[in-house]
Amino acid sequence: MKQLYLYIKYWRDRNSVPLCLRVEKIVLVAILVCVLKPGYSQDSINNYLMIAAKNNPSLKASYNEYLASLEMVPQVGALPDPDVTFGYFIKPKEELMGKQVADIRFMQMFPWFGTLKASKTEATSMAQARFEAFAEARNRLYFEVKSAWYQLYKLNKEKALAEKNLKFLKTFEQLALVRFKTGGNASSGSQRFSSGISQPDQSSPSKSGMGGTSMGSGSAVNAGGASMPVSGGSMTQQGKGMVDVLRVQMDIRELETSIESLNDKKIPLEAAFNSLLNRPQNFPVLVPDSLIASDFIADFKLLSDSISAHNPMIKMYKSEQASYEAKADKARRMGYPMVGVGFDYMVLKPKEGADIMDNGKDMVMPMVTITLPIYRKKYNAMRREADLQQSASREKQTAMLNDLQVNLQNLLLDVKNARRKTEQYQWQIKLTNQSLDILAATYQSGGADLEEVLQMQQKRLELEFKLVESMVDQLTAVANVEYLMAKSNY
Image (tube, rainbow, N blue to C red):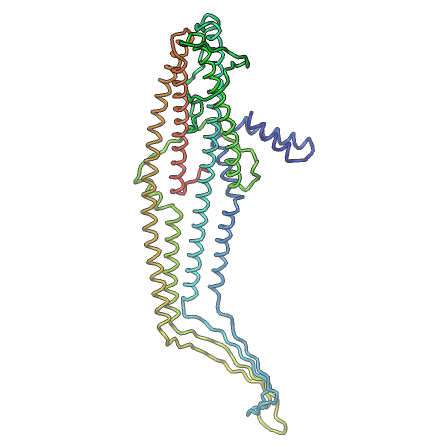
């Protein structure tokens, strides 16, 4: 319902449209939220990936570069432009068949057999390399969107855990006030306290020290603002109860400040996420209440083979090598003669007083031209250049594959460590919840110190934060592996 409210608020603030249209949008969002709730997290991230692929300007620029490279194919595959020469004699030239007035020449050159085909193969392979560069940019964009989305999820969980802890502390504040007023026996003036602890869902970690046990200066006032006297000498039970109240109030104030900081931190995170989707920075982002890490087979050999076969960078280098191979073949064929075929059309004027057959009849002379590629150094250099470029691309492919395999090893280690930490934190939180229940009940009966309760509560909060951190780390590492494998979620 919170996400629905954000969407309603966004459309209300940004769209000055008739009420009936706004109602239709609100109803549509409500239907989507209700219908897609079971698979909400997966559906929403897939929708965000599609929006990013459609709108991201950097990705569109990369795609346009690929389209531009395709336009090179018809350019290099076409014949050279024919030569047409026109000459006009100011003073007609005397010829046997008459006076030549003008001369028109046409010549079309033809490269050696297979040269144009090699040029088209070179351009096509280079265009394919551009496409693989686009695919790499798309996959990197997908990973960045997922990573930013997981960070927003982590932030929301931090806030939810902080609010849950704040509610816990406020309940303990009331219990400490009762204990202070009754002189150290909370159970005599209140009902039995329940900590309300449940098994934790995936919670995100925070290193800001929220809900900590640090001491600071403050007024000796209770929750209602009334002054509480401090007795001198040894600490009485009533004085100790007053210190407990002040201690809880200090932690409450610290936690409220941390929640405000989390609210401020969410603004740049949402702006960065929306920037990837090329939409307004204040556009609401739907984040689920919980995420579950998908099943992931951490088989290095299987994943390494998949990367070798599908990673766009590896495929890009393979396309480059095919392009340079075609370039070497083109250079070899360019070292052969080019043949030109044309004609020479001579415009003649009849000679006056001459009795000659075909006097003044125009003449057509077929022509054949052939080039002599006798300067071999440039052609040999072109072939060596293509061979060296192909060798360099092959070495880059090997280096890239080695780097990808090292990255895969590190990512698999990250996944394994995240899983191990997740199991550890879940087990520790279970024990911490049991301990906290016991301490809370003991404090209510006057048999435990508040310091012990708050320390255990802080320990539980830290573990819950670390649990969500391990979950986010695992999800991010899996998304990174999918990025290396060029695997899409839809």
